[in-house]
Length: 345
Image (cartoon, rainbow, N blue to C red; front, side, top):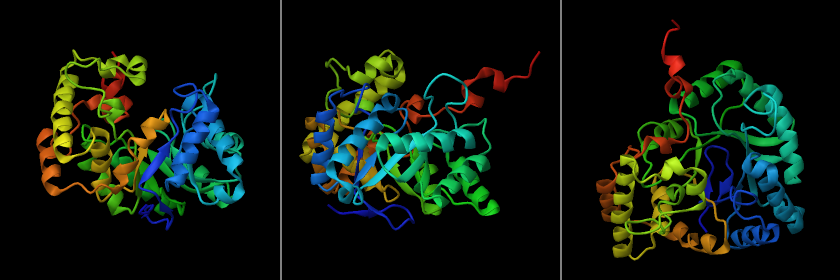
């Protein structure tokens, strides 16, 4: 497998990153089966694993920790292990967010669940407008200096916020964001307009989530099909086919499936290969629930899509556009909350 450098860190990672979101209560509850999937991924050359504290309320981290512990400390040293902080991890207003208080406390909890002395990449899962960016960066810098984490990054941050973070780090002499983890697929291309160029400008590694667009590009969706998935049962509004934006997505899926078949690829293979084509992207996160789902996309790392195919994809979904704005992954409260756009009476 061809390895890529993660931004300016000098760390080499596989173009496929094993996402562990579906390990645990949100997907596969069989810990031994999850361990087998992890082992197969490592055997295939994947050296990058991404999880988060909030996935199945810590169970995903525990599964990954169990699997890596069973492989022994020498194998752990070969793995670039990433996790995240931000989401709610229990009752109370302070068991979530990006405050120094929570970042420091939850890092210790993730270390325990992962059974490791250090986290290679610690990511802030979403923006937190209530917390000063410099406060979060300061806490993360302290974790680097303490040896608890090696690098830190962000996930689903808007481009302007990344610029603000880099300016704050320079101004305060803090460690800086090394990576960003945004949503990106053939159906969700909004980050091509500004976020990916910003990441390139600041030398950030990019590991993208949902290259199969939440299952839309899994090969199971299409006209005349059941069009259901586990994620659809949890987020029904995102898969409502009465929504005109989702109707446009369904039509695009049909055209992309035909294009993949004509090129000799499965739709999931072409979808992951498309994401890896962009020069700003370091790795695409694949989140299998089963061994079959893992093996179904492994070949994508070796596929080089021809310009003619990419040109046809551009005709289906124009560059820099999301067919459904809800797929962007994070809506700023000053847009989603009406009270923040209106003066009080």
